[in-house]
Length: 177
Image: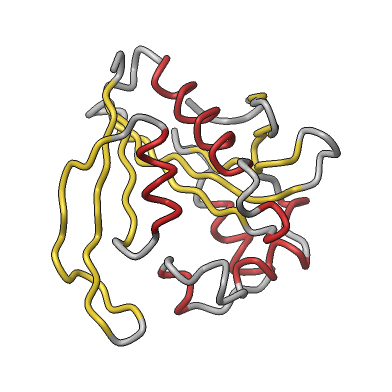
């Protein structure tokens, strides 16, 4: 399932494998922007080119995907998506980051999510797609629910956000659903 050469077209976005050339000041800036990573554990880290390259290399020789989300109209990078595949179980856990704040609220994230998840669920080797988010990440909850995912589990008071315990919500969608 390696993503080399994989290109997916949505209505608003193009998804292609993330490469070392995508690690630029803008991308590193997204990862270090408290607004962009406020619901991610990336908020506890400081990123630089080295940390980004190490993360990219972690995808080599795996079935996992690390995709660049780009605006279809001008090929401008707006975010990334990941898909962590468990081939033995036929499952894939998906994540998304729309780092370009000018793309927020315009449907790019939903289109990117739907483009990747629909492609994954068409594969015969994937029987279940999963994703999780903090209960206070309303945008991500809406994105998952609009894509047809349903709430599967809750880990009560699992993480601390702004000094308060917050649940983690886990969503799923099955192949053929």
